[in-house]
Length: 276
Ligand code: ATR
Image 1 (cartoon, helix red, strand yellow):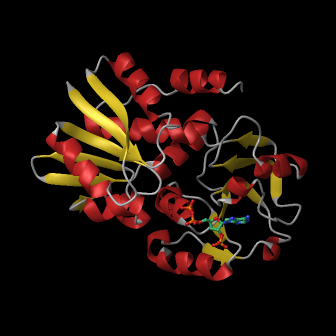
Image 2: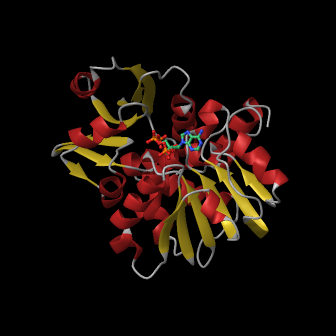
């Protein structure tokens, strides 16, 4: 039986085993998918052990995505741009690293939420790993402009400079939160860690254009503080990161198994379990 896993610390809360089991059942693939807790100083050893035991690939979650990047001898362009790896594949040539997070975000927006990005004004909040991972897939979707805003402006500026070549003709700019006042966006994506502290990024009012969508990469039982604020500020459509979670899993499954699973029934079941 082909073996897969998600490796993290902590990892017990991960929904990946449930998601991949559903994908496997739905596509008639015979595989197992487990959650593996790696010691904080033992990621590479855990991967090596899993490979030796017949593992074919794994997902990688907090806090090991940078170590997974370093461990992968070959990487996809999107993993290279992200500087982080959430998907490892083991084959005869060694360890291949990919990053499906950004593609999962874009697919959730464009397919599940019916929110095209082409020609739209997009605001990405944050300049850490989550924002970096989303940048190349977002730029590839052809927005009219992409604005990066972060609490620490210099980090957003550095990220915008780094992705200037990838942006091509797409205007890519950096800003602090307060300086956004007066601008309007069609899609606002929260890639900050503010929700972890039960906070919303301090955005000026009036950012949401008519019909705009607010997207939080985080998810939980209720609305995140960012989504609560977005609703109050006039965002028409709200979405949390549960769809992104399922879509990044589907991208990993596609890489490993060569077949794209249907995400809608799996997402619906997770929403039901969360009482949403
Ligand atoms: P991740 O990998 O989750 O992106 P990270 O690299 O530590 O984590 O980045 C966290 C991001 O969330 C950063 O953009 C951070 O802003 P700073 O660069 O100014 O630190 C942002 N962030 C964290 N807490 C925040 C808060 N309470 N309000 C706004 N932004 C916050």
